[in-house]
Figure (cartoon, helix red, strand yellow):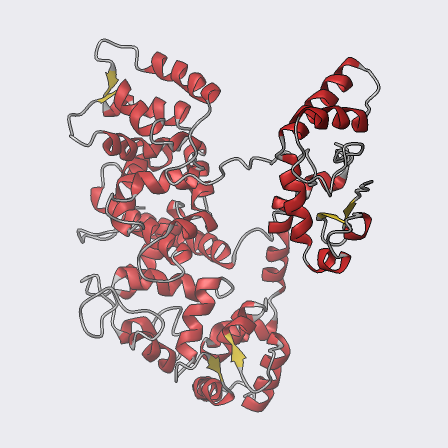
Amino acid sequence: MSLSLKMEIDTMDDVTCLDPELLQLPEVSPFALKTSPQIVEDLFAQWLSLPETGHLVKSLIDDARAGTAVNACANFSNGNAVGSNSFPSMFSSASAPPLSPRSSSGSPRSSKQKSSPSALGSPLKLLSESMQEVIPQFYFHNGRPPTKELKEQHLSEINILFDNPLNGLKIDEFKTVTKEVCKLPSFLSSALFRKIDVDCVGLVTRDAFIKYWMDGNMLTMDIATQIFEILKRPDQSYLTQVDFKPVVRELLATHPGLKFLRNTPEFQDRYAETVIYRIFYTMNRSGNGRLTLRELKCGELISAMEHADEEEDINKVLRYFSYEHFYVIYCKFWELDTDHDFFIDRESLIRYGNHALTYRIVDRIFSQAPRKFSSELEGKMGYEDFVYFMLSEEDKSSGPSIEYWFKCIDLDGNGVLTPNEMQFFYEEQLHRMECLALEPVLFEDILCQIIDMIAPEREDCITLRDLKGSKLSGNVFNILFNLHKFMAFETRDPFLIRQEREDPTLTEWDRFAHREYIRLSMEEDVEDASNGSADVWDESLEAPF
């Protein structure tokens, strides 16, 4: 009986199968074979299990290796002469099915074999299976381990730095390791030293450093993650203001631009507090006092730290660390805090900016609508609260500032500013203009101007997203509650416009702090000349000049 066998590869499902019509089996109905293809699979699997089939395959392989002509039919006939055929009515001794064709190694189908039951059980499936691509591990719970080459490179540096009789370094000797091995700002040295010296023995050995920095996979982390891991406490997944104090304290002790403050510890504390408040004002967008790793990576603190470590003039580091910026903030607070109890009340804040703000907006601030006060005294604003207020007031284009004033204007807290809410604050502005004999501008006209500036998605309300998407959002707040800046916006001071165009990288806060520092310095020079002394204030918390 002749047996013809054909293997077809389905172009849609990519599955190898047999064509039952090509099997000339009179004992079995072709319709049964079509409806039950598993019968063919079982028959062929049983044929492959016969000893004669094994001899046949082996002989064919030997012939192929020897380069001789392959005669499958003759080989199978000889095999059947020795043993009995389990299927005498199906496979004659003079014929054998052809070998399964091997798929070409270059075929695109060879890399896409499916694992369906019929394919896995098929005796005619492709013999050459595609090589499975091994995906390298890309997530490491404790950080990616350093490569052997990287470890050897750093080990040579570590061995040189720790080569001393103690086989370790004290805290004042550890700065070189922080800079050269860890590639971190030098004023993180003390924090890193104490992180490794958990037993507080005052010495970090070579083995202890390698265990923390290399075995702990700190070596392969990005710099933001490294700083985050160094500063945070073991039981926390975030940073608090307290965690930054050792860093700023070491900056004060080592930076040449802050050397003049070393004899005034009270102002060192004020400077450190101001720097930390500014960091959390800008970066802790949730406002919960817990700085996450994601917030740390999204902010500019790391680049500011690196800049401060390389720049000798601390006033050129405008982000967070500028002493001039601290000086302006602290002097403004000192001017308003007339009794110097380090708290400010409503009447004191009204005097800010030469009575620029309205009573209604000040009341909203003291109702703690934009931010809960850190002071525990009713009706009193502490220094930290004032820093948040002043940064928001002098730069209304920043994200934290827009959020601050949006919460003030949003009287019902529903997340949108309605015309009625804006009119409530503008009414006092209108009254002040009338008292100053200025030409009043009706709210209807102001509302049209605001809509044109912001271009909100809906004309009946303004959302926080609308304000953040506009470069003129700060002017909207000035229109509603800051008369001086509103008038300046209406007159369009050409000097300020030219100043902004000269250096667009500076923020509104940077420009304000620079102008205000010059003004305060000139006033101090005049007072020094009239008093003949640099000691202007006799109080224990006087500002350094």
